[in-house]
Length: 146
Image (cartoon, rainbow, N blue to C red):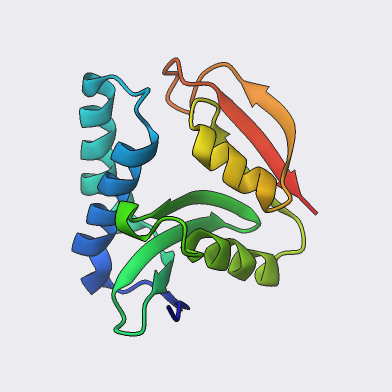
C-alpha cells in the first residue's frame, strides 16, 4: 500500500470523524460511555472543524489516518481501525520527525497499543499526569523523542 502525507482539506471532515471514532473504539476501551459521548461531541463539533491536520492517504486519496500538531507537539494521531498495522501511524510520525528533530506527545496510559507504538517509534516517558487535560481520571504519559 502506498501512503502519502498531505495537509487536510475541509472536505476531509466526515472521514476524519470516522477515523477518530473507529480508532477510539478500537483503542480506548477504558472510557466510560458518558465520557466517550462527551469527548465525541467535542471532537465532532469543535476540534475537527477548527484544527489543521496532516492526512495519511492511500493511492486513491482515501484518508487512513490523521495527525494534529502544535509546533513539535503531536496533539493527536488517529488511524482508522481498518488500517491499523500497515504503517499509517509510522508514516505520520516520520513526517513529524522530518519537521521537528525533537517531538513530544501525550498518550493515555491505559491505551497500551498507543503507548507501545510510541515506544517502538523511539519515544521515552519523561513524565506522567494522573488525569487527562480535562481533569478526567485517565492518566497521561508525557513522551519525548530526540
